[in-house]
Amino acid sequence: MTIEIRPTGGALGAEVLGVDLARPLNDADFATVRQAWFDHLLLLFRNQDVPAAQQAGFAARFGELDGVPGWRDKHAAGEENILIISNVKQNGEALGVLGDGELEWHTDMSYMPVPPSVSMLHAREVPDSGGDTHFMNMYAVYEALPAALAEAVRGRVLNHDSSYDSSNNLRPGAKEVTRASDAPGAHHPLVRRHAETGRAGLYLGRRRNAWVVGMEEAESEQLLDRLWAFARRPEFAWAHQWKAGDVLMWDNRCTMHRRDSFDPAARRVMHRAQVKGEAPLAVESVAA
Ligand code: OGA
Ligand code: MN
Image 1: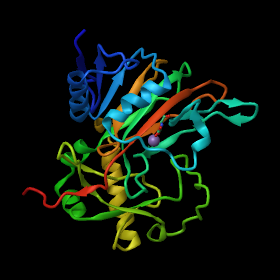
Image 2: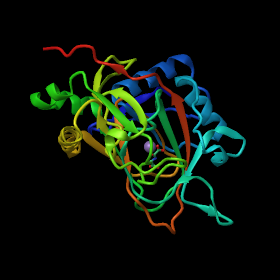
Image 3: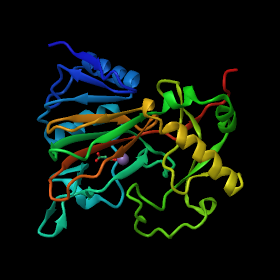
C-alpha cells in the first residue's frame, strides 16, 4: 500500500494513511513521513495498534529519545522512554501524569535550554467527549504578524519560566514567582528559525511569567499580551478529537498546544514519546 498524506484543511496537520506503526517503515516511506511532518507540522495516524516498544522505535527515527526528568516512575511497563499521560488511578496511585484538567497553551519544555523537537501521543483509552487537544501553527502566526508587532519582536529574547506547569501548578522544588523578570528558566529567541525547515516562527512557550529579556516589566507584559491576543485567533489553530488508536505527533519548534478538561470519572490513557531537539536558533535578519 502506498502512503497517502491528507491535509486536515485547517491551520496545520495532515493525516497519514497506509502506515502500520507496529512495523518498521522502510527508508523511503520514512522519508515521505518525515517530509510530510515538516510540511504540515503535525501528523495523525489512525487505528494504530502499536506496542510501546514499537512506538519508541518509530519516534527514535526522528532523533535521540528524550526522557522526562522527575517522571521516571510513570513510564509504560518495560519502556523507559514511553511516558504515560493519564488521569487513571490504580490503588489510589496515578498511573500517569497531567490528570484530567485543562492544559493551557504551551510548547513542550521550552523552559529547558534544549527543548524537544517531537512529542508523540498514542491514544490507548479516551473519553467519549472532552479532552480534545488544540494545536497552533506558529509559522502562520509569525508570517501574519502586523508590521508593528513584527518590528517589536525582532531580535528579542524571551525568558521561559520553569516554575509552573501548564495546569498552573508549581513544579516540584520551584518557588512562587511574583515578578516575571525574576522567574527562573531558559532564554530563547522570540522568533525562532527551525533547524530543519529553515522557516521562522514565533516561539512563545507559555504565557505565565514569560518575560521579554531586558524590558521593563510593564512593557514586556504589554507586548506579550498583544502577541498572545493575536496568536489566539482561531484561524491559526486546529483541534483534534481523539479516538482510541490515534497516534499524533507534533513539532514543538513551530507549534503550541492546549488540552480541554474532561470528565474525571472517564478514563484517558496516552503513551507519549519525546525526541531531543536543538537549542533554538535565532532569525539573524528579517527580510525587508
Ligand atoms: C503533552 C500534552 C496534551 C494531551 O503530552 O505534552 O500537552 O492532550 N498533552 O494530553
Ligand atoms: Mn504538552
